Each structure stands twice: as C-alpha cells, then as structure tokens.
Length: 191
Image (cartoon, rainbow, N blue to C red; front, side, top):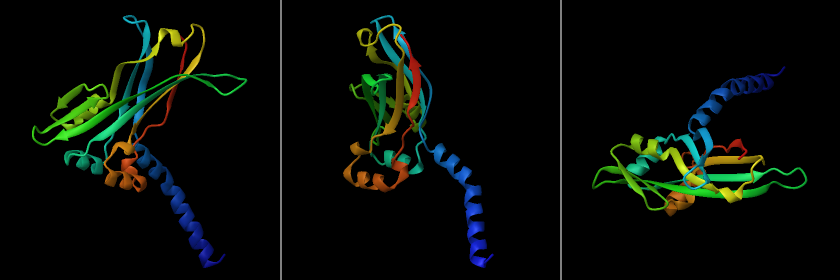
C-alpha cells in the first residue's frame, strides 16, 4: 500500500471513531419532546394536548435574548387518519407560538403566548421551564374525531427564524445555533 492510501484509511478510521460523539453532541443541542399525550377535556367535550419539551439554548441565543432579541418558539400539532388506499387524511392541525423576551428595565424575562397572555420570570431557566411545558392546549373538538377510529398524532417544537429581525434571519441560514427544533413525536390516538 502506498503512503497516501494508508493516510486516507487512517483519516477515515479517525472520522468513524469520532462520528458517534459528534452525533450525540448535535443531539444534545436539539429540542427534545417527552411525555406527549392527548387527554379528554370533560369541561368542553374536546381534546387537549399535554407535552414536555427540553429546550437547550446555546450561548449565542442566550446572549441574544439578554440583549433584547425576542425568540419565537412554535409548537405544531397534526392529527391524521391513515388510509391504505390513498394518502393520509389530515383531520386537524394547530400551532401555538411562544415569545421569549427580556426587558432590561425590569430585569425580567417574559414568556408571551400568542393569545396575548404574558408571564414574567426572574431567570432565564424559569422562563424556559414555563415555555417547555404545554398544558391544556385544546387541539381537537369532539366532532372532529370518530370513536373507534385510530389516528396518528404528531407534535414538535421549533424556533421560528422567520420572526427574527432581518440581520438575524441571515445568520440563521448558516448557523445551526439559530435552527433549534425537535423531531416530530408521533403517537397513536383512538378516542
């Protein structure tokens, strides 16, 4: 074997040895969903979503929030009815937007829901904890689903880069710190 081939094989072996560590490091920066469930709401005969997300903010995003840049997180929900003879039928879809901001005058972080409800927090960790817990979000009316039919529900959370100020949108195209998202978490749902 030639020296070039030996060097190339050594580089490939080194890359393959480091690849699992790189994957775990990339996964550590991603939003993760856990404990996702759809529960029946007895008060209004609909269905509500409950989910927990782990939202790790990279240092660059923490710094941006402290400097007054608002971050918008979107939780997306879809419910489909699988069909063997055609594409799956979308039964319902909903989105909920959370705004995370910092007010320097009051030195408080503020999480605002898309309906205008705002809640102040003293620390970024408290604000992220509140942002990461979705509870009581009405995603389905009773008339949208049929009893005895099995559906496939999916949920995810992502940082909406399109709502950032324009200079940050340009940076978000090339920088993975600004591309936070979770994979779709899927669960079977049978009312």
